[in-house]
Image (cartoon, rainbow, N blue to C red; front, side, top):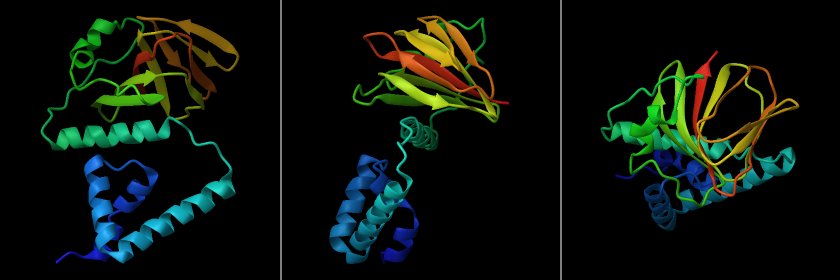
Length: 202
């Protein structure tokens, strides 16, 4: 017998309201909301709470959070569905795009072309998370205190601005962000900037 309370406690309704549930999960939530008034009411309560929270905070959402949350969910589902984990090489000054061809050439490693930022995780270890990232315009200011951020440009061009220093990068270029430094990425090409991004534990 279907237990409404247990379903509500799974957290799927929050994912649905945030817009990060899968297509299948959205269909399931909408069907159950039509069948169970408690689920429908809970969805409305979550929406109202989030609106109040957003209004109170008045903060611009970080456009990087959702793409990387979605990438994490996608990666987890791929592992659960039998994908064999792989460990991409560590990025360094000697890295070349060809080092990542086995991931870049996979048919599932593509951007839908509709998002300002899109990511696909290609490797995860306790030391590093490696992803392919597509940027249309920019990645906002960040400061990393616990992880190094490394970039290898695959396609397009961008400026990585660290504090006041502007670094012009194009295909094949490598760049590492120092710890504790405010930085942002600004796309300078007419095409999406595609990068290998690696976040390495400090």
